[in-house]
Structure formats: C-alpha cells, structure tokens
Image (cartoon, rainbow, N blue to C red; front, side, top):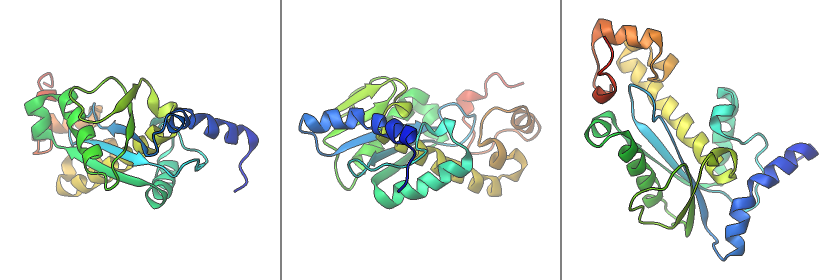
Length: 208
C-alpha cells in the first residue's frame, strides 16, 4: 500500500503504546473505547479490539475526527483484520446504575467477550473500578493509540447503526439524524410525544 510519508509516520506513532507493551512481553494488546455516554436515548456501546501487529490503516484516528463515510470504511477494514468484541448497556441499566458505571460495565463486557483474551488492555479515559483485567488508562487515548482508535470506530459505527434501527421503531424522534443526542429537534419531540422505551429517564429531568 502506497502511504504518504507524513501519514506513515503518524500511523507508526499511533503504535507506540502497543510496541512498548510488546517489548515488555505482552503479545495480545487490546484497545477499548466507548460511544454514547452523552445522549438522552439509546445504549452506551463499548468495543475491544486486538489489531494484527504493525498493521497500518490509513486515516485511522479518534472516531470523532472522522467523517461518517471514513468511519464506515475503517469499520469494514477493522472487522476484517482484527479480533474484536462489542458490548452494549441499555437505557434501563444506565438509569439504574448511572452512566459512569454503565460505561465501565460495557467496557468490562467487551473485554470479557473476546474469543482471544487480551494479556494487556489500553483503555480510553480514567481507571475502571474492579476491572478484572490488566490495563493502562490513557486520557485522550483514542487519538494516541491505534488500538483504542480502532475501538472508538467500532463502538461509534455500531451504535449509530443501532440508532438507525431504533428510528424505524420510533420514527417520531428522528434518531437516524441525531443518534439520541440532545438536539433542539430531539428535545421538542420528547416534549411533544413523551419518552419512549430507549430514553434514559435519568437524563430527562431538566427537560420541560
């Protein structure tokens, strides 16, 4: 693959955390990230990804920096090449245990469901309570680690696809457009129709 020098250098830099752990004897390094902490509706989704060592995926980055088209293209590349698992925690459980605990539960489930268990995991963000696996937290990790970037893309694309499916079931809310986030149109739909089963009741307290 013909990759411009500047992009090749950027991609190789994204492998630094993984290479450092490989040098310490860890052979199955995974990345974990989530999508959907902030929306008013829908699940929080986490992905765990082990990429083939040294693979260069042009354009890979924090999913928030990518266009929808690029995310979907990279999603196809990642699921073809990687070992991965995706886990969801729905609105009812988010309301019961709060969004932080639900996010951590999704991350734990994503790791636990891997068909090949990681021997070290890089996670985006702050430490996880009682994780049950060996990990390194990295603030802003989705822009610093290729494995976390890959996980961020899987989580985001998978969650967006779920929200498009929910839009068919609950068309009055426009989930296919805003994916559950608190846009003006979404909040107006909640005022008009009330919440539906995938709304997070704990997130709706201040909507009048």
